[in-house]
Amino acid sequence: MPDFAKRALELHETHHGKIGTAVKVPLETKEDLAVAYTPGVGAVSAAIAKDPSLARRYTMKANTVAVVTDGTAVLGLGDIGPEAALPVMEGKVALFKHFAGVDAVPVCLDTKDPDEIVRIVKALAPGFGGINLEDISAPRCFEIEDRLAEELDIPVLHDDQRGTATVVLAGLINALKVRGLAAVEARVVVSGAGAAGTAVAELLLAYGFADVTVCDSRGVVSRGRADLNAPKRALAERTNPRDVEGGLAEALRGADVFIGVSVQGALTADLVRTMNPGPIVFAMANPEPEILPGEAQAAGASVVATGRSDFPNQVNNVLAFPGIFRGALDHGVRRFETSMLLRAAENLAACVEEPSAEHILPDPFDPRVVPAVAAAIRA
Image (cartoon, rainbow, N blue to C red; front, top):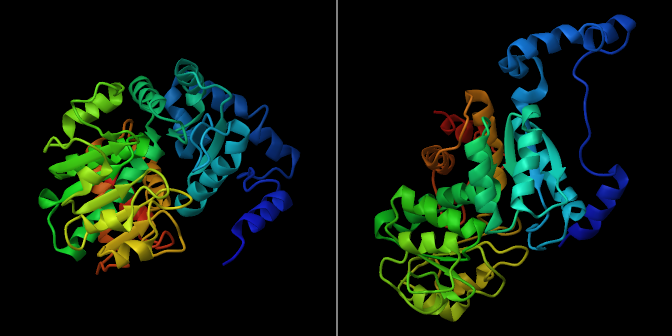
């Protein structure tokens, strides 16, 4: 297997990161300079001062997204700080540009205070057409996204929540086709009640799944638990319709679908065997999944997905966020609605014409993906 860690270190050292800036206009003569900068640019600024909406016509704003993090929930590395988060944010920016032609800027904040994060992002917002929140730990991420979405006039998306949920739903739509099971009949267990797990559960319910149970590190998120924070209490009111008590083992008995956004080893072969015949397993913990695909298949799983590129059925947010923001920028979307993400998941699923056990999601390099998702993001 290639040594990706070594190669990544060498690549980043050679290029001093993955992104830079590019100039789109000629700057070869004094006349060029006079048009692009002073004195000509004064006319552009004066026009925008009279009509701020012209910023979308005359500047980079119409095609630019801020990728904002505080470095508290980076990949599987956790709270590693804003500097250590920068390589990941650079990667996100590169994917925005490569797949959707969206210009993006990494913004790494040296604060964990939700009030301060909201204040800073609001102050930065005039220069951007959208805000992509990234790798901000729960439960703060819920408050930050909600407040910014309410207070800004540009779209705000916490990708760890909404992007993940969109791709999971797309994959699950096709996995259910392979299994021959309707969403309303499926019993789903989500392992992990943080940003991703909560958003996945909410989007599945909105799609029409009727039986979704969520587990955190202490067991089933249920109405009878007294140790739940506010987001989990709200989640408990909308999930676990059979009032299951206990832990993951109890939740999985007779379940059809396991969706893991938790930790390596959370799911065992023995637990898979307690599920209904031919269960669907999405083991998406990074960098190591809750269970390896071979183990899950040997235990009877009919469809297995992970977050990794070296196994079939990679659940990768790059299938969603470039198209989501491409559509938002193109269609003048002010706020992301659940209906948009549901349509995006359906369009993404439809990119796979003949789903199979090893092909439930399209390749990120499929040129149909971004246009299909973008078409769904409109009022």
